[in-house]
Length: 496
Image 1 (tube, rainbow, N blue to C red):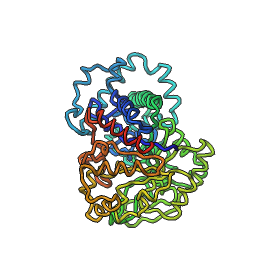
Image 2 (image 1 turned 60 degrees about the horizontal axis):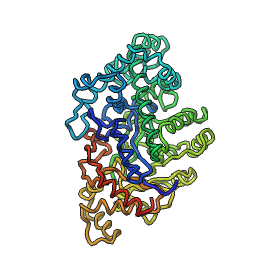
Image 3 (image 1 turned 90 degrees about the vertical axis):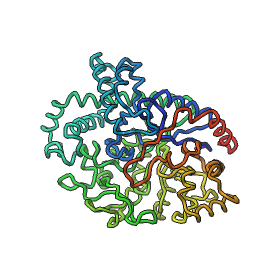
Image 4 (image 1 turned 45 degrees about the horizontal axis):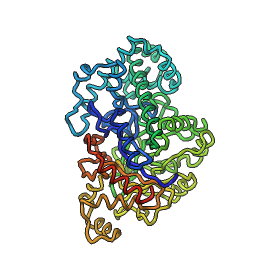
C-alpha cells in the first residue's frame, strides 16, 4: 500500500434527496470532490439491509444490499417511477438526520411501484435481469424467500416461524415459493437495482482514481437469511437454537462486557468444507469493494463465547478460532486480498502474532492514544508503516465532541504530547488531522465530520445503545470548495 489518505463517510450520510444518502448524483459529486482534494480512498460502512436498530452491523444478509441506497431519481429516469409518485410519500426530507420509520414506511412502497412497472414492461425476462438472478442464485434465492416469508409472518425472526418453515422442510419451502412468488420477485428486483447502481458508482470512483474501502462484520446477525439457510455453519442445537453467542468480556469501558447476541461459527464444520462459505463471502466482497476492513479481527484468533440466554457477557469464555488456517485457505483460492484488520481493544500476544503472520495492516485510532484505559500503542511515534490511522471511527465521538467528552487527564496528556500550551476546541480537530496525516502509517483515513469540525451532534454511533444511531447526514453544500482546498493542502503537505 502506497502512502495515501482517504475519507470515511457512510452512504447513508450523503445529502441525497428522499430522506437518506444513496447512490445519487450527490454520491458522484462526493467522488469528484475526493479526487479534487487529492484523496485516494473512500471508506464506507457495511452495505447490507438493516433491521431493528438500523445498524449496518446487524444485517438480514451478508450478501444482499440495502434497498434504501437505491436512488429513486435513477428509477424516475429509467421510467420505472414518476416524480409525482415519489412526492406522494413522506421520506422525512425536512430533517437534518434520517428518520428510519418514515423511510421504512415509504421506501418499499415506492420501490414496489417501480417493480410493478418493471414487470409490466417485461423486465423480468430481460437478458440483464435473468443473468443477474442466475449468477447470484447462490445467495439471492434464499435471501428473497427468507424476506418474503418474514414479511408474511409480521416481520418476526425465523426462529419464531412455524416448525416446517423454520426447519426448511422442502414441502413447506415449495408452498412458500408458490404462494409468495410476487414478493420473492420484488426482493430480487431490489437486489438487481442495488447491484446495478452500486457497480456504476464503484466503477466511476475507480475511474477517478478513488478506491472503495468496504467493511464487513466478522459475524452475521441471528435474524438473517445466512443463519436460516445454513444452520449447520453455526453453533446451534438440534432445534436450531444457538448454544453460545458473541460478545466482549467486561473491561474498563463496560463492567458487564458487551452482549452482541450474534451466533458463533462452527469452525470445525467450516474447516471440513475448506472454508468454502468464507471464501465465497470474501470473493463476493472484492466484487463490491477494492479493500475490505474486517470488523473484530481478534475473533479469528480467539472468540468470546457467552452461553445463550445470558443477560450480560460476564459468564463468557474465550475459545480458539481458525487462525491462519482460514487466511491460508482464502489466499490459496483468491490470491493475497487487500484486507484491513480491525484490531482495536485488548490484544493478546497470539492476536498480535496472527496479525503479523497475516501481513494485514491493523488500525490506529488517535482518540485512544490519550486514554489511560487503552494501551499506548495508539501514539503516533509507536506506529509501524503497515497500518491505517484514523482520528476516530464510526464508533467514536467526533474529535471536537471528544474534547468535551474526555477527562482532564487525557486532555492534559494530549496537550503535553502535542507540545501545546492549551487545547482549543476550534483548532483541536486540525491538530489531530495533522498528527494522523504526518504519521508514518501507510494509510490515513479521516471521518468527514472531522474535516467539517463538527461536534457530538454528528456522531454516527454510540456502541451498546439503541436509538439515535446511524442517523447523521451531511448537509448539502457543507463539503464546500474551501474544505476541499484545505484537505488538498494538508494531503500534499504530508506527502499523501
